[in-house]
Every structure is written in C-alpha cells, then in structure tokens.
Length: 337
Image (cartoon, rainbow, N blue to C red):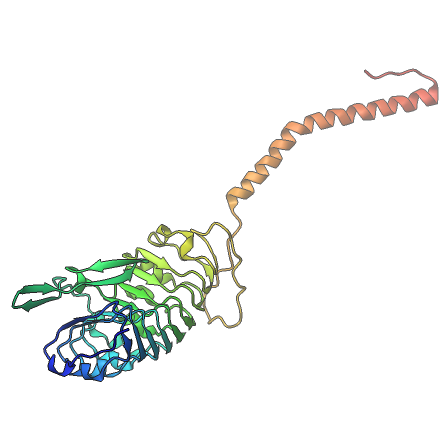
C-alpha cells in the first residue's frame, strides 16, 4: 500500500493525472487543490478513503474528467461538482456513496451541449503531443477511449448506496451519451421526459426500487443501443417503439411488466384512485379477434361433420324403440334393419 508523498504544490501546471490501480490508500491530499489547471483526474481501482473532497469542484475549474471508480470513498456526492462547467465524464462508481443525487446536476454545462469537438484531449510537451486516454464502462462492457475521448459524455454513479428519486433535472443533460445509476437504493419513477435526452446511447437503471410505468418517451431515444431496467418494481406494458423492440427480455426481467419482448404475460397492478384525472390506464391485453374466430370456426366445423352422424344414430334408436313397443302391445314382429 502506498500513501501520497508528492509535493503537489509545485506541480501547479499539471493537466493530466493518472494513478489508476496503484494500491493507494488514505484520503486525497488537500495540496492537490493547487493544481488548478488539471483537466483529468483518474484515480480508479485503489483503496482511497474518506469523503470525496468538495474542493475538487471549487479549486479545479478546468476538470473535464473525474474518474474515481472502485475505491473506498463514502458520504455524499459533493454538490460543488455542479459548478464544473467543462465536466464531461463523472465516474464515481463502486463506492459506498450515500444520500441523494444532487438536483444541481443540471448545471453541468458541457453535458447539456450536444456540440461535437475533434474528440481528442491533447497536451503539448517537449517530446511532442500527448493524447489522454481512459477506460470506461459503457454498454455493459469496459471500453477504452483515446482519440475519441472528448466525444464521450458520461455519468456513472453505479454500485453505491444512493437513495431518493432520480431528479428530473438529470433530463436536462441532453448531450449525455451514457447514464448508469444501477445497483443503488433509488425509488420513485423514471423521469417522464427522459425522451428529451436524445443523445443517450446507454441507460442502466437496474437493481433499484424504481416503480411505476416505463415512460412512453423512452421509445423516442433513437440512438439507444443498451438498456437495462431489470430488477426494479416497474409495472404495466412496455412501450412500443422500433428502438425498444431491439432489446431482449433481459432488459426488463424482475419487474411486473408485460408486452414484447417478454413472452410471459404478467397482469399489471389494477388502477387506483391515485391516478391523475384524465390519465389513461392500461388494463392489460384485450380479447384477440383472431383467437375468437379460430375457436368459433372449430366449433362450426365439428358440428358440420359430426352432426349428421349423431342425428342418424339417434333417429335409428327412436324408430327401433317404437317398433319394440308395438310388438309388445299388438303381438307383431316388426324389425327395423
């Protein structure tokens, strides 16, 4: 295990700091606040502890990338991060962070913009040009980015103990490509206007306590290629839409949902008085006319084929019964063949 023993106060021109996977322990040194030109801070896969310092949002205004995943940090997400107008990548996953997602997250100006840059974060040195690079979890896999790094806009708060509802303010981040809030303690509903986040390619809200129906606006995300809403408390019909039909049942398992791509019907919760006035309630699948027609046709066909045979046998039985009565009463010997 290694503790920080670096005179950060003399590295005031430092722009990119990568210390991933170095068995670092202890808290982030406060002297790092003197490195005011930092663009990238990547301390992932260490054993750093304590709370994430608020001064990162106050003293490091140029930050584009905060990558601190897989450490031992605890406490809330600093609201001071919301003042980082250039921040494009916020990865604070795999901790014990608690509290709510800050509503001021909508102040992250770089994530609101959909303007595309050249894609590279480059630094000129005496030995030439250096391109920043980073590994991030997107689409359920660990992907490496270098020349396209500046095109990525990502929020990954997964595998923490965050609670409360998903703030509607997050839907203001219309430039965001990937949103991962999985494996937390989130409740409430999926924001109804999530469809406004037209740039989204990846959405992972799995393993929470999110309830209610899936918003219809989710089907408006034309670029989405990865979706995971599994193991929540979602109910009702999965919205129809050409993009949502591309996902497998795995994206929706562990809920009380029905409709494609789920093959097993799960009856939705009955409507309650809590529904707002005028809200249309989906009460489940209606009777299929094709199925009714098929069953009626089968009945008619059966009667058409078997009916004459049964009628002939019944008539023969009645005639023979009448002949037997006449034979007994009048001593005749009538025989019906």
